[in-house]
Every structure is written in C-alpha cells, then in structure tokens.
Length: 155
Image (cartoon, rainbow, N blue to C red; front, top):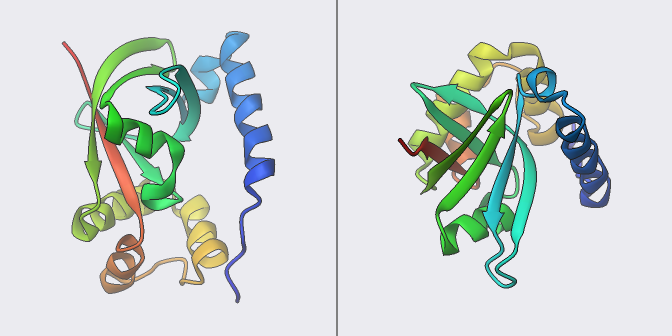
C-alpha cells in the first residue's frame, strides 16, 4: 500500500480544535494523548502554541516530529529550548532536548507501539507503508528521517 500524504492545511484546523478543547476546560480528557506545547517563535519572538501527541516516560515528555527537523515547533526549540507545556490539569516550564539519533527515536517508536498498538499499527501501515508490527531494523530506517524532542520539566 502506498503511504498517504498529509494535508498540512487540514492539520492546522485539527490543531485549532485541540487548542479550543483545552481552552474550554477539556484538557483532562484531551490531555490523555495531546499536550499543548508553547515555544517562542524563532523569527517573531512571539509565543507559538502547538498541540502534539506525546508519551510520558520517567517524568519526561517525548514528542515525535512527523516532519522531522522541518517542523516549525522543532525549529523554534532549536533556537530557544525553553518551553511551556499544558497537559491534562498541569502547566509547567521545561527544557527541550532535540533528538535526531535513529536508535533513540526507534526506542520511542517501540514504546508508542506497545502503548498504542492499534493507532500506531495503522500509522505504520498507512503513513509509512510498513507492517503494523515493524521490525527493529524497519523502525530504525524510519527513524533516520524523523526527529523528536524530550521535554524535561523544570523543578
């Protein structure tokens, strides 16, 4: 099956919906899989809010970048790694660590596959043309073109 192409204009509408759901108090419900990441715009210097899927692992928040290092939010963190996060009922400051190492990203993908087998299986199949349960080699090959950020909450 041929991988699907994402319509980024439609994705912006989905992001607006997630920001609205947090604004009207539905953060605890939406926050089970979506957090709101606020970065500082690298050109404008203005706050930029992006809803993103995440995994919490050992108190840190892992965010995969579907567009690799080209995502605006990723590039904003590259310019200034201080971020704000809203997740469920929490709001905190954190520091973002950029990760492009394929082995570390493949580790993250394995965790996501374990925690969300149906959703990730569909993503692997439809977006990447991989089997729903890809091998480690396949994950590392995919991870070579991806990026992620690990947010460490500040004390």
